[in-house]
Amino acid sequence: LEFIDHELELLNNKAIRKSSGETPTAKENAEILRLATEYLEGTEKATISEILKNCEAIANYITIAGKNISNQKLSAVLNKGVEDKKLCKVTEKKVTYFSINQE
Image (cartoon, rainbow, N blue to C red; front, side):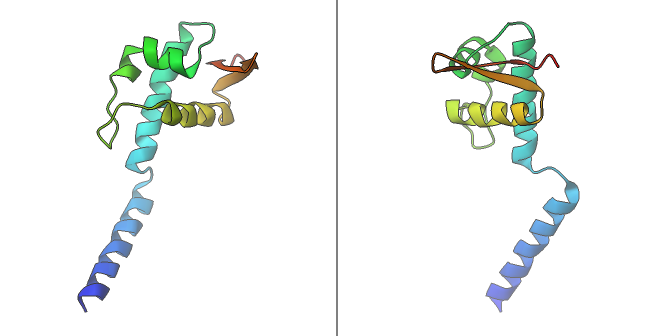
């Protein structure tokens, strides 16, 4: 009976998350994308490493997990920005640069 109560509680929590819209991770990713976009507006193009190194807001950002943003996390968020046509991704000599989409 305890098991069933626990499962019902999990389903209820899942339903609440769906009805409330964005998950905490989605909100966090949107904020990271906003910070990266602000940084890229002041530069022609930048790599992920350059953004992490030179953008104080991102370098000091602490994720929900209590950690700094990793290259992999920033890459995923920026690639989502490319999919949404907010950012542009260009590869030159095996180096990937991101910039604001001018279209």
